[in-house]
Image 1 (cartoon, rainbow, N blue to C red):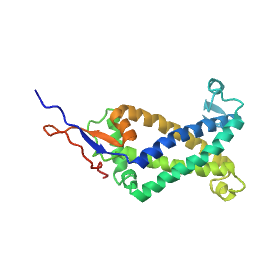
Image 2 (cartoon, helix red, strand yellow; image 1 turned 90 degrees about the vertical axis):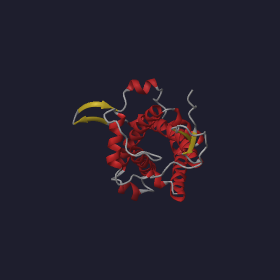
Image 3 (tube, rainbow, N blue to C red; image 1 turned 120 degrees about the vertical axis):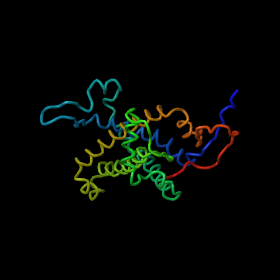
Image 4 (tube, one colour; image 1 turned 135 degrees about the vertical axis):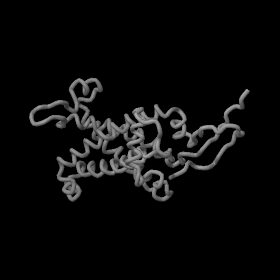
Length: 238
């Protein structure tokens, strides 16, 4: 009878990273929800050409299903409160990345764009092999770095909308109030798209990766004919 497969635990996510991740999730959810309550009062954006409209953000049936209409004051109260918590959590996350050196595992590298394309082909079952994997693969490096800049962009555009007179220099830098609102809206759509893709990728990766964001540890693929061990080594940063 063959020996049972050994189990090796590798440390993947520090406590601070897990903390910032799980605090950010409800904060971003509230920000998006309250933003929708605000957007209902002046929903001007659409996809189309000229007078022809292919898609409107958002149809009346969508608003009615979520009980959005006539909740502008509630949306503004939530949005202008939780934005400070969102900003503090984001600033803390960036500060931790810089001070701990974790930014080295996150920033894209010279070959990240090429390798990210290979990762995409692999996920679409159009390519068998994956590029060398570190703590994050190339596609994750690009996506997770982009989401940091998107968060900064949302804060900047949100401040320009919230205080267009007091922050007139920022509003002007962004092209005026209407352009700041335009970029703020599309950054929010980007967050929603990232959330859907991120959750889908976690589901595909399996419970092992999901558990790592709770406990910090990931079960390493077992090596045959070795006794069970616990390794305190971190995943390679690359």
